[in-house]
Length: 250
Image 1 (tube, rainbow, N blue to C red):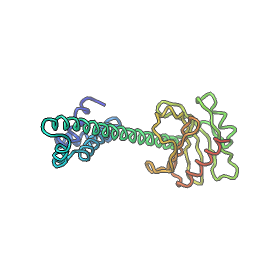
Image 2: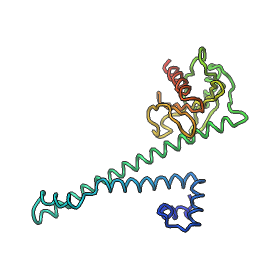
Image 3: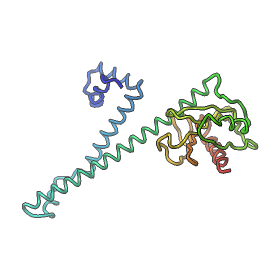
Image 4: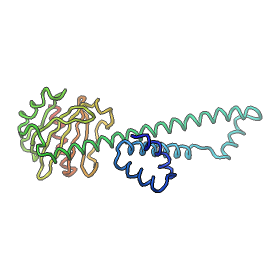
């Protein structure tokens, strides 16, 4: 992120830039992931501090009542100073927790966005898979030596899902497996990556959710992170996820 943009982020958020500068920076933020993430982080920090301050700031009546109850005369000032320090500590802790949660949510949203981009770019490619086969006994061995882990694939019999093939994919500079399944006219990507490479950004397991117009379900198993994403129905995503979970336990 260029220094010329970074120095203008706070005035931009406070609405202190000129109309021309506001429009220019607004256009830049929309096209720059780094600046966009920084703006979101600063907005979340401002909101967290503002919200915490409103929630925990004592009223004048509360302060007078507390001073009268704690100690008379000279000891009042000392007691209030201690209370003020305790309240300030609470506010700082609350703000820190909110900022941490905001950053975790932002990191998770960015990961979902990157996974969706991988899915879209794969389907748009003239060669979406590197190993073309519906046979799991062909696709699974193909990954050996190309990724640092192994996994199981479900038996396709009596299933409406058809395995089209697979390829090596990269997320956060980490190699993983991408499998392409088809159900009716929809294609679904199954991503498998080492869990520790993603920094614990995902919950251990999630229900099917909507992310960027796609249905997504993710879970962890034996140190691996599975992510199923596609424009198929949530029910189809869940069924394929259940097949994969069962396969890992066999």
